Each structure stands twice: as C-alpha cells, then as structure tokens.
Image (cartoon, rainbow, N blue to C red):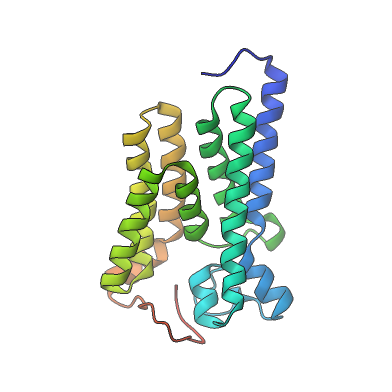
Length: 217
C-alpha cells in the first residue's frame, strides 16, 4: 500500500522512475561499443539485433565483457532507483517492477538509436536477480539448462521471458505486480518472434564459442 501522499509528488516520482529507467535502458552496450569504439554498428551484421549474442558472434573479443557490464549495470541502477523512490511511498517491490518494465523498453526501443535495440535477456536476467533470488533461480536455471542442452540461446531466452511472469505471480500474487511482470515477460518473448519462426523451421543458429561474422541471434 502507498503511504498517504499528495497526488502531484506521487506523479512526479512515478515520472522520474519512468524517465530514468527508460534512459538507462537506452544505454545499449552493444550499439555503443560497436558504433563508437569499433566503428562498425552491430545492427548491420547477422540478425541486425543490438544484443549480446549478435555482438559476440560478430566481433567476439574482450569488448564483449564491456557490453555485458553496460547491460548489467544499467539494469541494477534502474531497479535500485525504482526501489528507492517507490520505497518512500511504501512499495519498493512495485518500484522494482515498474523500473524493470521501462528499462527493458529503453533497451529494446532506444530513442537515441532509432528505436532499434536488443532483446533484453541480459538486462532482464539482471532484473530477475535484483527482484528475488527465487525468480532468478527459475529464470536463470531454465535458461542455462535449455541453452546448454540444445545450444539454442533463443530457446533459453524464451523460457526466461515466459517463466518470469508466472514465477512472479507465484512469489507476489498482487494484481499490479502480475500485470507488470507479464508486460516484461511478454516484451522479451515478442522480441524473439523471429527466433520462434526459425526454431519452428529448424534453421535457428546454435550457439558456439567460435565467432561468426554473420549469423542470426
């Protein structure tokens, strides 16, 4: 329950978390590293996706760690901001989910990169860790098992997106939390719609530690 607070400060805090989380999400490591350091936009290679898998397949190398760091840190900061500000209103958990949604929207549809971003797996996985270890266990556990057994990163990613709202529902059966969780998970699954088609047709690329110049992720 929110603490008693006038409507305008409440809306101001809500807007602050929304804008801050979205802009943090827009800080896309794969685009920034490839476009401004390597001078070769990752979105012009492979699947055209500005995500970790496509970056690794295209460029490989130690700069992949920079991409990971960017996508992890922005999710951590966004969730912490949401928890802190909403915590002042008496619902830090809601703040985490609210920040998570807009951080993912920023990552997937960054305004400064023509709304062409990534699929949200690394940031989403970080968000799961920040919210609850039980949620992280289900999301990451299924992701790792499916990815290792099949070598389809996309299959593990689909599990992560699809399982997130249901384990959130189990842990926190609050209608608003559940709606936000389904929005987050639905975005991840929607971003993988092309992968679903390739999986159904049997032409999805499997993950390899060896770098590929072109490939679909």
